Structures are given as C-alpha cells and as structure tokens.
Image 1 (cartoon, one colour):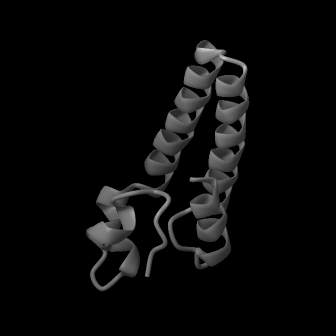
Image 2 (tube, helix red, strand yellow):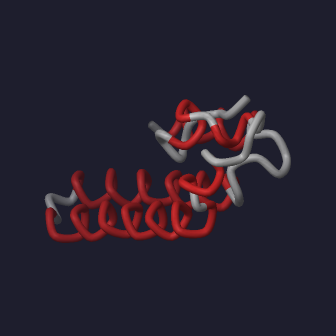
Image 3 (cartoon, helix red, strand yellow):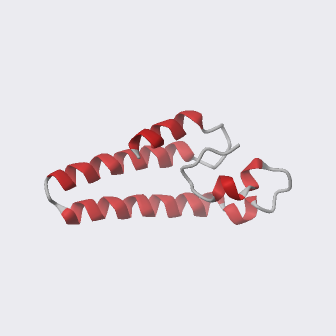
Length: 91
C-alpha cells in the first residue's frame, strides 16, 4: 500500500481530487505506524492508526464532494472511476 500511495502522490494531476497529496502523506504515515504497532504486537495502536486513515479519508470525501463532481458534465473528476476510491489516480 505504501508504494501505491507514493505513486499516487507523484502522479495526481494538480487540481484533481482535492488535496490528494495530503491524503497520500497521511496514508503513508499510517502504514508506517501500523507496521510498527503490529511488530510490537500493539493491536490497539494498529487499530487506532487504521481509524486515523479512515478519518482522513472521510474528511477528503467531504471536502471533494464526489456527488457534486459527478454532476459536472464532461469533467474527468466527475467519473465514478475517479471518486470510487480516494487514492486512485484520476484522468
């Protein structure tokens, strides 16, 4: 997942998908925290890291409002492929 996050943050076009770079950075940090927690057998910390990513993803979705983007005629940001998953490259 961390490799995918790095690829997305490099390839995401400017202005597409809101602040995908911030979400990608959060995801990379969460993956690192999760791995450290699992190596230490600290399941509660690993679960907390996953919930942090969930919170950041929910915030991203609320900010980008994919339902509004879907209404934009001819916009690549409005395609279901773009907003189906926040970490996917659009376009």
